Image (cartoon, rainbow, N blue to C red; front, top):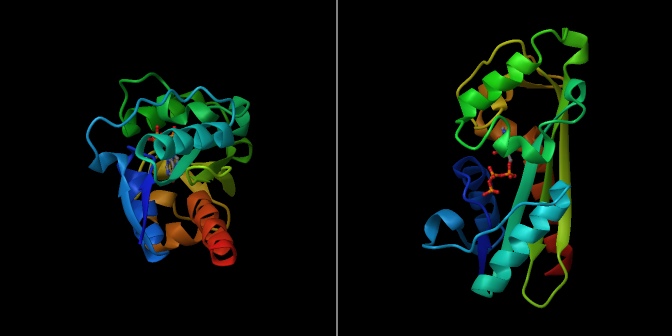
Length: 197
Ligand code: ITT
């Protein structure tokens, strides 16, 4: 079985990615399972650039396949913020709740029709010695007036996907997997693997 390290230290992502990648036939671990992982500075301007940097660093360091996810929330009324800075929005010391409270505060004067937003995800798959392969997913929606739900992670309680009345944090794992940015990117990765393995 091919060893694959998911290049993330984010527990929410690990839960959403690892079992799916294991089902694709990889022996999976993440950076949460290893000691002293390599330091990765996420200084790219795009989700793609950061995903490639994370996967390439981990593939080179451990000499095995790596899959990285770079993702975030793009809010139209904030000119695309927090975007690639989603994990750091409001500063490094904040937890998920403090971060989405800060987002709600930034949008407090923005009426419902102008609260449009999307989650975007770029997955980069790197095998040592090969070029990176990139897979993308997007889910359109809007930012709620107040948080709802306890599933998921990050900004899920304040994001309502188009076509649903629930927030992303009120959906169960299978529902989020089916419509999320990450779920779509993982579907593209799985389809590509089918053709290329
Ligand atoms: P790694 O780089 O270690 O993977 P990270 O949390 O720093 O972890 P990113 O730089 O890609 O990852 O930041 C993504 C942030 O965007 C994440 O921390 C959440 O705040 C937010 N985010 C991404 N996907 C999300 C999702 O499915 N639900 C809610 N928030 C999400």
